Image: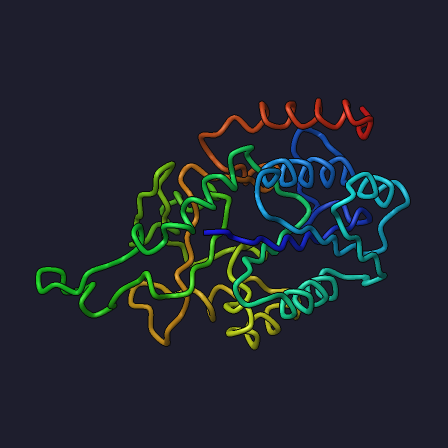
Length: 275
């Protein structure tokens, strides 16, 4: 299966962080964007991927940075808010071919080097891994039906708050070649899914861009225990394949400092990093 990935990467180096949360490893916003992008770019090096940067009034430094990657298209406009840049990102997503996998990505996620190796393998054998049987002995599955026919959404990080008592809840667990995948019901706006899925739920994606509000997206698009109203199946990997680069929300059980230093060295070799 030749999977085509459209990477829509939103970037703005004028805003430090939501709620003034501290950046990982003491980075400033431009360093954060560079690490986020290079980790994603390297993870997709051996795959059929097209990169589009949705820039919100990027500085000349960041424009020069992205200009070093010939396969990357930069659309730099003055949006002035996360809501407007998200709306622009969605406009582009709606125009991609139905069978492409679109990664709506924010600019502060560090990806593991093997992230898309795991993701691509899981997508390729989705039916084998996710299929549920309606046999009499499994009454819940008989009611739900075959989960493998539902649209799939992947959220690459594994947020630590999912393990806090308040947020613990029943969920499906799937096993692929490289890792486990857990059904989840809440994400940020960093998700991977087929273009036709984004188009199918366009109304709710557009509503979630107001604010923006990832809660609206989660409540309207992702199935919970009984998958009422033909919602999607949303999963995240265990161990997580990316992490939000803010203190306090690091994906657990992964040596993110090791990956951080790995990509700092990569950027230094390219003369694209400053201390």
